[in-house]
Length: 365
Image (cartoon, rainbow, N blue to C red; front, top):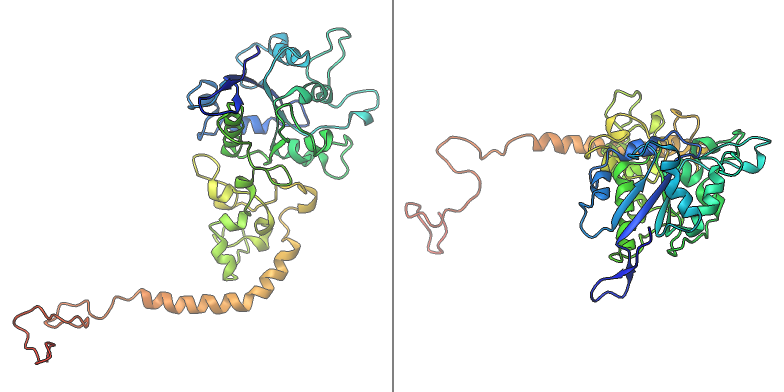
């Protein structure tokens, strides 16, 4: 299928009225990102593919978990067509980290279908080489695809990497877009679907390209830290820390990296605004970050800077907590003028009352 770019009245930017999404999760992956996005509701994947979102182009989704096909060559048909240059426009979504097939010995690290001529497996790398230059947009879903993630940690034998490491950080798609990275382990459902919707609106000619930071993440989603959106942050300010996982207080001393991790989960929640690691008593282990997991291990140990910041902030925190306690105790007492006696003690001047004697100046005696 090839669609003709459409131009809206008064808009000089061309857009598409129909687009395919070719989703490959055959990288070093657990398919957790695909499972995660099925929980999105704003928007939901169902609303996108059934055309219920106003202004989006018609979307044809090709994802092995969500495909209505029986699999096999029926499922692979659009991917093969795109590789031959017979399907456009399309968005390429990659899930899972990309292994280094140059060090696979005589085997292969990944496979997605077979070569029809030889019967040999086609690796993820082969598909990326064929599809990425032809794709209107390229999206990396999850930390593995974005930065390598778990499979790229020190000591791994596969040489795994993120998509930008494989294609190059200056890569531009056929639609002149950089790779769009939406990290998370797994990705937060609405973070991905909201970004995908923006890309689709851009494909329709109805929106500018999504703003990305220097790590190719959506700026509006990853511009703040976990700590800045955490409902436990007030305890940190008062140097009031948890020492076990049953406490509602700040968890920096039990291994939370929230103050230095770019992620919006505490504010957004996980499903329908509910959940998210610190919100339900879990520590932040930095799973949205390019340095994950190596720079955040061992998990459950206090971050190196956590001890220093907690120690320096303790005198201030203890003082502020004490002062706030005094003020809180005062504010928990009703004012003295709230009583049922025959007198008014608020200081209010009832000048309008005829039965109150006044002075020559007009005020009460």
